[in-house]
Length: 450
Image 1: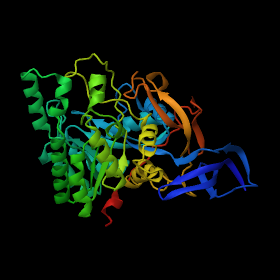
Image 2: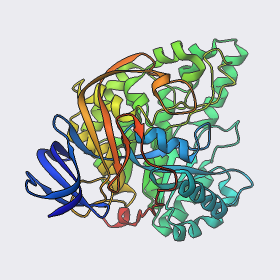
Image 3: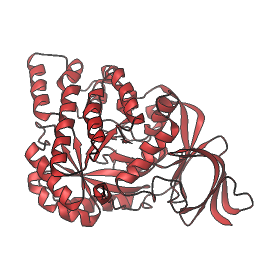
Image 4: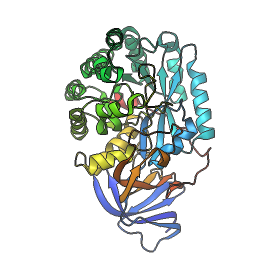
């Protein structure tokens, strides 16, 4: 046997368990997995003793349109153990669907060091809906709409949300929804400003968990009426779990996502970082953190996405005027491992399931992506569980210049990221060059099979 790369002595993590195994890689794919590949020849042998071998993380929720573009986002992600990104290609009012997809694909192929796929983020559904069928031919089969941000002009009302679901169902696509009650939250924001409330302290009052849960329930109801699978992004609160559980118990095609920030940070973080920690939905309570961990373990929530949205903000910025979003992609795997696995909230196989396998399955990339099986792309991460380090802005690779985990001491770190048999990052050094990425077509038609 000859391999381009042989990885030996590691602990291979699948969604159904952990095994000591060697991996042989040839022609960009995994060609052998065995307890031992002793006697094989290889162009390079990597000794993974003491490390876990994980499928590369698939981050289904990134926004490469702020201070990190397609290239910057991929570099930051690769340092964090991510090997596949699914970006939101925003189609702003006045823009057209196919030219937007073409622009994002071109930018990714020129700049990215990681393979990527695209969701469409729709801001003007009334005028853009006619072009959605053509997006399927392009390989974009998932469409995000906002049920909030009415004052910003981003909100899709129930009429057009239902219309998007109708078109998506006809084409066997997936609708993704940012679920908050936009009109009610805008009223509460206006009321808090009239009454002179401190913006930081009023933030969770303005965007309460119960109105997030209301929108989750409403989106589920509309999706069920239209026969359309629904992906609920960035669930932040315990109250969201009730409608998601009911949908799962009924056998409805509803996928729940949460994010590292909603599992590991609280409103106390907002009090410290102020504008830098402004995001929608807001950071909530420790009780919400714990409930969401439970939702991951009982399959109420099936995926984790970073919602990487690095926007230039200072702690001292006017909170009301500050944009929503924060950097997350590079710290995602480390924080889920540190607080989730080390903290006893989630098992390592379940981490692999919600961060690699399930996103690949949902968007039709499995088992090419999201698995360490013979025939899968050789996308993997060597993760050292003994590596103690401190997260700082200086240690990150985003252009944004801050992290909400500043000074956090953590145990466990990705030390090598590989995509299609090529090392992207090794020992805190970027190896890959821009332009090595493949554009991936998504396929959500399987969600209609049962």
